[in-house]
Amino acid sequence: MSTLRLLDRPSPNFDVRSRAIDLVVLHYTGMQDAETALARLTDPAPTAGKYPGPWQDANVALDAPLARVSAHYVVGEDGTIFRVVPEQSRAWHAGASSWRGEGDVNSRAIGIEIVNGGHDFGLPDYPAQQIDAVVALVEDILARNHMKPSQVVAHSDIAPERKQDPGEKFPWKRLADAGVAVWPENISSERAEHSVVTVQTQLASIGYAVKQTGVLDSQTKAALMAFQRRFRPALIDGVADAETQALIAALAHTS
Ligand SMILES: [Zn+2]
Image (cartoon, rainbow, N blue to C red; front, side):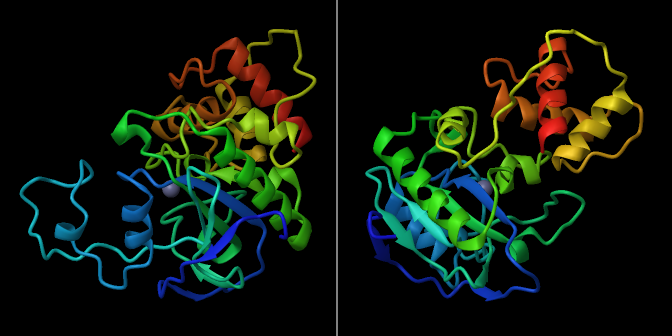
């Protein structure tokens, strides 16, 4: 990690992993600034009054306890990487989530919080030096843990009905070009109209928690939106149009 600019900012919010690491989950902090996010991620007793923002009701009791949260790393806008929880420990960033048929993502994941205001703060661009640091960090994590680019996911991928981060501004193609994330390749020009069950089966084969109901229901729409947010950010509508289907089929075959 010699090329990474690392600072220690330890959090007491972690416990013991119940299984081996096989995922990297990328988030945005979704807060006003880096200091507020670091304070929250290292706070052993967070309350509503300490973290005012659009995510909570204006009338909430100031002493109402919030969930204790953390991540392994926080990447600042200038590319500084804060080490918050040791990789061998279980950080608390994923919440209710699932990938490739398995829940308790916190037990199997390394969580990286990327400082960015997100949807609540106008969806700012990610600065290039910040993305360079994310790429270098993920590259290092994958190499040390013998993991593949397909094991790097968005929070929105593992919790599509609850989460949108790191958001449609996050440059996944740049990560894929650097070899630390997947991107659809060999996209078929044949515009086949797949059945809903086929689309659901392909989404599930990529890793999304989609049940094969044969109906374009809310869980399927949420997964389609998560997929589009990451791989076709120009239009995120949850509709399995021909382009979305071709991208899904391309990734279903390669992952
Ligand atoms: Zn998140």
